[in-house]
Amino acid sequence: MLSLLLVLAGAAVAFADAVPPPPPCPDGKVGVTSHSGGACLDPAPKDCPAGWYPQLGAKCVVQTCSFDANCGEGKACVPVEVCQHEIMQSPHPRYGGPPRKVTVTDGVCSDDLACPDDSECRKAIKVCLPKGTTKPGVWKGQPKPTKKKPAQK
Image 1 (cartoon, helix red, strand yellow):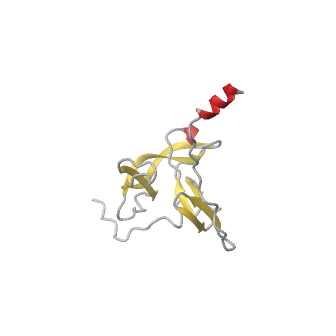
Image 2 (cartoon, helix red, strand yellow; image 1 turned 90 degrees about the vertical axis):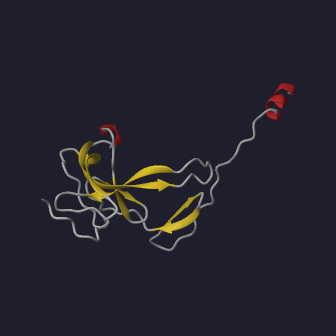
Image 3 (cartoon, helix red, strand yellow; image 1 turned 90 degrees about the horizontal axis):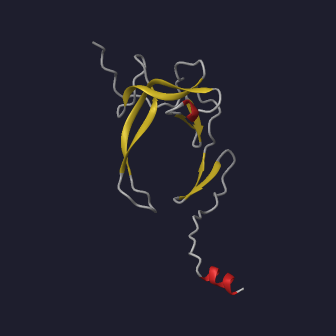
């Protein structure tokens, strides 16, 4: 009994990583929660094109990868052209650390499809595609450029 008491007395204090429960949401919304609080978001779309995956907030996001194993069964990691830009990500609110540069993938691009103004079309970025597919689809919600694409020389 004494040994059990000594073990319990010497135990380290555990810190919980608790977040509040999701808020109640109106019909058609999904409740989510994080360390920043709760929110009601639109559900993930069910019609994301090849190379994109569904995300809460009614978004499709380009599914970048490094290896076939990142993609799941029936998909391959294929080099394509995508729109990307860098942002500085703020330090984690709880753990701190310096800001860090993060690459954001906005969508797909080609000779006929320009990137949003703050992004550039980068070649050979790998994206998860169904096996046998060579190009990703274009999501209807992909950010559009506001300036005309310069003429090719």
